[in-house]
Image (cartoon, rainbow, N blue to C red; front, side, top):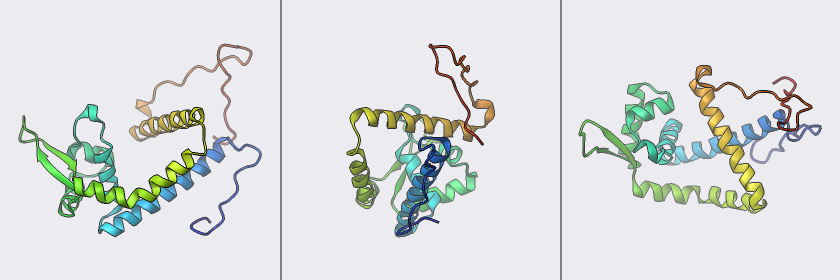
Length: 190
């Protein structure tokens, strides 16, 4: 068991960059992020789902336009009633604002309130500092690889959530003797 003040379980020494090591490290990081998000939610009188909604509004792809209740419902996999209750809580707490679209008053956009952004920035400043400290331990070239890995993981997680029918065909496995493509091997138990 791990947690604050508890020693972390060791990674498999025989394959520190193998699938098992990645799984352990990603679970640990996800667990820590979830604990921090839960603490923020509690400090604001919110639910964890509300924090996930705030993150979705903050990180909405600008190419898709402002976040809408319908997109938020899809992204969080909530019912219409649950997303409405979530938006109501966030609006009452001053974290988001509902703004009607100028060109179509039936369309509602969700915007992160400036005061709430400032509050979140102050709350998460230690996390930003820790992130910057960790980044400082790597070269620019190493960070480029880390960013590429994280982007690919996020892309793969979206595909997993969307279901197997949305996944592209796997790349061809090269002949181990071919110099043009590296051979793809499967992890044991993967």
